[in-house]
Length: 311
Image (cartoon, rainbow, N blue to C red; front, side, top):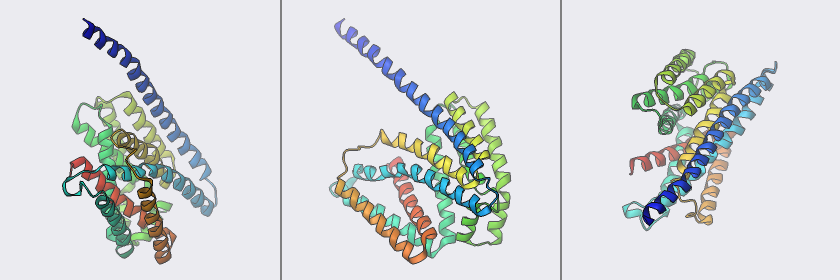
């Protein structure tokens, strides 16, 4: 009897905690959904300046701020690296960190020397990585096919909307990286149709799939924001408020945040800064930031895939 009473007391004590966590989770998601829509509207109003130069500058500033905040989730990589404990590297924690930095360097240099192939690989890696995180988030959906379809459609919608206008700042950056070839021009011309198709799939999946109301509100608010926000801001909103927040929440609970030596963290940051400065010196700031972003993305995605596959 005493054991049963004790178990009952634990359940009664745990119930308010679960309700509290659920409440804060709902409140957080509603706040993020509202924030995404509001920022999209504000950015559209600010970027409606009749001067094309001011329009691009405002859009670029808003996007850089959002992408910078969204990139904070990548800071968990160093904690993940320190948690790796596989076979021969069990007693050598420096090995996975060195491999991570090597991938960063490989990605950055590959974009400098082969921008066409690297940019295509960059986009494909991002599509795959974002889709996997989207799929992981949609745990409430009972049908895995709807989860796959909805996840892929959401990510394709983001990229299609980002490049939906040939004259947009995001398309200008892409053309500067890969050149104004016939294939790229044709693909950019199809982005508007791809965006419409992706939105249609998202609406169908939202009504057919038995997901949670929270997922429905998240998806609906993001779709509205994507349609309203300027092209590059649309991607930045998704990256910051959706992908960045989702992966931070997922990874934070599974990561030991006290295992990292501050000296190791500083060394990694210093190596990143040195690589960035060297790249800026060689190819200029725009290509340098994109190159470093690709290098970090390559290492981040490789680490995420490896941990998910248990490699």
